[in-house]
Length: 424
Image (cartoon, rainbow, N blue to C red; front, side, top):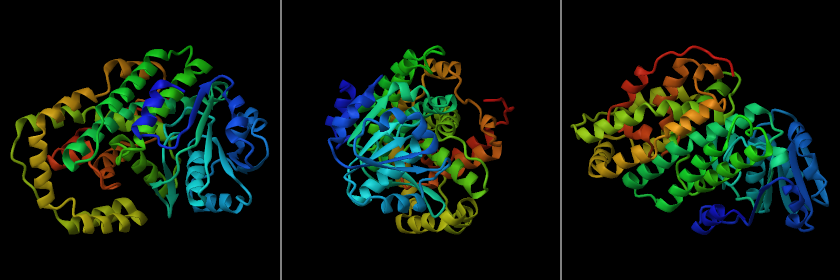
């Protein structure tokens, strides 16, 4: 197994993950990994076609095939539950949605599951959380680590090109997530590991150094991308925050679902979030250096009205959480501001260390990743709203919350300018 993935497992970031195979012909490992257990293979129409070579290597199994466009919601979970009679292991043959359905269902039934990715499109293959769409609201739920990940590069490189470039966008989101991990440790006292953070940075940078326009859609490139995504995602399982770029992506997704409009690929919206946040880093750094006195005010009534307007049916849960935690109260904000200034040297260090390197930005653009929100049919207002309100999604500390504490967030959102639409 890859030495860096082994390091992550030993660090506790991917507890329960026993095997990771990323290579041409990796599906040949499936039969011994399943080990004669009766399997339920869960897929959808497109993924089953892409991963047909895996199915023949599993052994005794039943197959559950969802229609294209399935969502990781209550209906999908119930469909899997009804198919679990005599099943000893679940095999997820698919990408993000199929993996989340299986991960959640495996945890609910106390069954092991094996992940067979069909696209290097997201970093959740090695996660212990499932992004589920319950009651119309997307949120992470504790689920199950895969017992094994079998990423056959021949299958991965056959994925639609847009899904592969979405994986590149997911990797950009690793940088704000690492920063948010450090900020949460400084302000809320959460855990942090310099060794693992350095490992993730190195994996992402090595990936962008390896990829070229010529190999991105070949087994070599797809494998390099999958490796970096698995390492980044494994670390994410131990972090309370999915990262501010991902919160922006989830907010955009939620709003599109509410309005019954097409939802961009998750990694594409993560990229928009990460690229937008690049402009926020220097503003936060300047404010931290200044140690200026911050006027603190908060109206619970106005906040609740805004959350109801922006979050619709999801608002009640957020309001209940705020009333309990009172994290936006003047007292808690002043305490956080004091911690920010007390931790200024470390914050300034990580605002530099966890900025997206220019070389990565250049490589990402050259490889055809989404760089502007109009490419996703998003408006300037969509992005501004996500910047302003995505921080309410989860009660964790991110650069968005820090910018709000320092009275920078509203001005930053107002400074964002309109961009012309370019085709994907």
